[in-house]
Image (cartoon, rainbow, N blue to C red):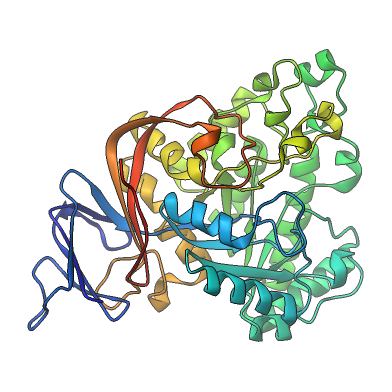
Length: 430
């Protein structure tokens, strides 16, 4: 199907484009920007007047509720929620409802996502077998099965020698190692940031050192092995400074932050609000401001949702016993746009954090498989109205999980259409 998207404001950070121009799509690819190519006759036209047209969003971390989940979420439901939020590519960590430590699970996830047809799902393969931190996983086989990188998810590899060998194996396969920096001994049993709030509420805390010590160890191993690594879900300003120094010294490292860490702090826990139980925990205002500054300076390359849909019961337990995580797909774009409204980033810079930069981290941009609207690139496209205000309500969420502290927030920027490889996967009707 040939489609022309007309009269929109085209923003493509990867190619430095921010102008009013038409976009033409044919054979699942971008066929032209501005004037239609010779002989192009559109089968359908989309009027994007007053809207922004940008590459489809890429989310570096999202759990999808299957295979094997009990939250009511599924790949079909969560990719549909992603499409409604302008997200065309999701990265699934290996420690979700099913461990991605063998090619069969990776194939199953890709097959179910393809059947659903709402968004593309890329998998991270396991770093160690069963994520137990002892025996290395078959990374070569996982790469052949389509895994975009390797990770041990939220489970620590305690043995430093095992981590070193894992990085060496990943480097030999050309795979990026996705790291969650948390010392398991310092974090054990914790559910909130170790500080004034955790003491007042009597909650066992997770100190900042749990993150910084893990970052320090892994940076040393990255330097030793030459592995390419990505630190996900950073929560402390001190850890971010360590990574900034490593990048300055030439280490092949990148980092991202979850959108909620840019707005919420330990104070938002209030009186045991389980919607604010996340991992890593919400930290201090100084940490939040440091993360924002790191985003402005470019040390943080991307913003992710860290989507974790839960059933209602998961958040009804006492705070330490409740399940951590936020249903966050549908707030990724508006929370990112809010950074531009607040003047921290330009609109193009903000969109780069959810399009161009995650595509670069995953190696998709150079292959024309996401993050760009260049001619010949895959036609993953998001259209949104930047001036529409809306309120996040549980009954209107597309995700099966309604667990979010942003319920009732007035958000700005509504997705009006989403295209995956030139096919319309979502169209908003008022």
